[in-house]
Image 1 (cartoon, rainbow, N blue to C red):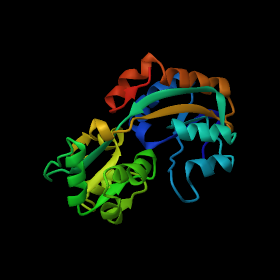
Image 2: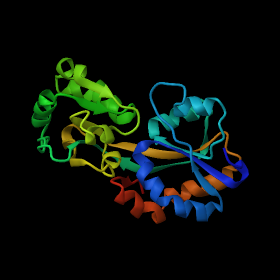
Image 3: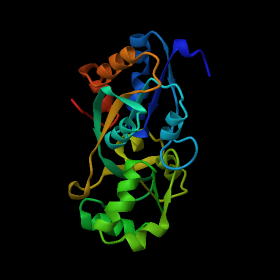
Image 4: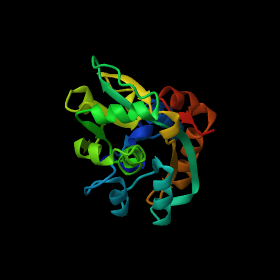
Length: 236
């Protein structure tokens, strides 16, 4: 670990990752510090975002789905003051480049596509939770589909691009930057779920005022183009 006094440390979920990475030079100028990405995961294991915060890891801001941010705030791991929504994100499906385009234009064709797929990858974050606990149940195919699904730590799209799984289900912003994917398509509107990703100041942050300034930048008009370019919808 470097000199914490010269670092501004960010924990970000994968969905906001591409936008955050493109904005890192602006954040460095704004803070006058080296921007350090405290890579995190959601789901299980000892190094998940929430467990790292509970261990007291020094972090300045946390960017996650709004529901998780509220939970972290209740636990006292994130401060209520300064939190703000940054972006909205929908879930999509993708296949390996060269594979036929799956038809997911309606709930019925999505159901057929999921039933025909030999294997499906999903993440441990909000998109995977929705897919495994709500979507396949709504489509009436949970029993047929869940057995051929696999949770992937990190990038689901990368695994599908390598040909190890047939379908990727993940936030659109996480699928779009992955080389080797094709036909990245949002879920049909009647079964789509839009998640809000928000930023908050970590309780371990050594300079809450500076962190609040960064969150105001990320939630403001200066960051909107980068957020939109990543496949997200700016929250403001």
